[in-house]
Length: 486
Image (tube, rainbow, N blue to C red; front, top):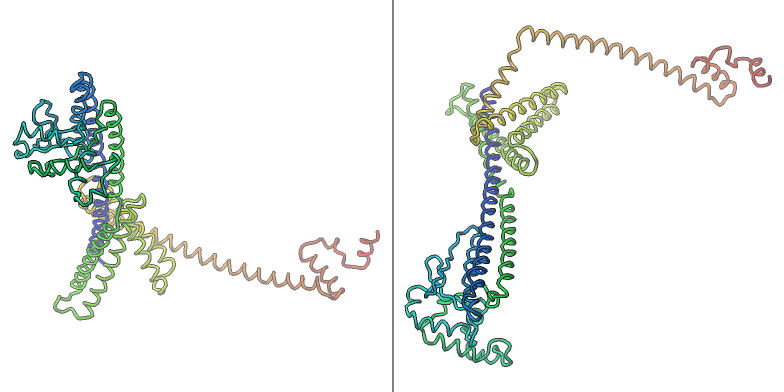
């Protein structure tokens, strides 16, 4: 492969790595942006609740607005605005509720819709009597798009009684005063039978009737703040889960990497054959088979590269450029190992080639990292950095002068001569060692022979062999008697 082809291949590999790294960074940037937005959301939501508490304290309770019987109605209006806006704000939506506060036909405005609240329990009519009274004063209220809002618990009862058939009243309604009664059912049916108000013109408040009483609103709104904090935590957890690397994104990275590397391998294989002097129309089936085989290997390598880079960059503290270099080194060394198994190269050549492969990929990774830092444009910075770094590295590597080359050759020759001398000396020493060991074992065998005489003579010979002074060796009867009896 020519140097230009090697450079193009290196750029393609680092481009894939930079693209996968960019995908990861986009996902992290999105998470950080969403978390920052959620910081604002929860602050705005809690501020709406705090504002509602303050307004109720100062403008309703402190002024005794509405008196004993009517104060809860004004508390409900302010609380509805605070809670309604807060629940929207905590999920990133804007505030839509406004408190009109003019004692007119409209209590609240929500995105242009007029709302009249009726938090009334007197008379046991669940606020329907108050709605009738309001409509008598403002008959066009519903026609103009207005809606009536009643406590959530009242609305649930009304909806249940409205949808209940006469046949079900005997079994579903209370006769002991615990729950809706037949009288309540008749009142609800009679109210809607007039046709003046449709069930769809009513809507539930976010609060129950008892939650807006003078002695209860503080606890209600503090509980709402706790609920908002829980919602905030849930949303942050979901954001983190959404930002996690996933199977689908990993497969996209793998397939794109396989397609790009396979395509690049196909193009370079065709170019190599064209440089050999063949025109496209002259390609034989064998030529196309070679090209297809090269492209197939490129697809396999690209898929391996994509999934490995995606995994390393997301599950370990590894940059995309380094991850790509790891893959390139692994594939290159595997190819060299295959050549070694086929005896195409020696062990020394295998080690040298593996070192060069690792060095080349390390230079490529470092160049890409520097390029991406200096040119913060996704993919482009990595490609430019890799190109410049690789060209400089190749130029430096090939710029050894003749003198330096001759010096290296002399060093290698001296090393080879020294290896020959050491080898000859080593073989000579081994031969001497073998002879000495043979003699030693022969003497040792005689020293421990079953025959006492042979063993005695062998012991003498063994003692002399291992360096015992001849005067101390018991090699005669006189010496033995003197040693044991004197």
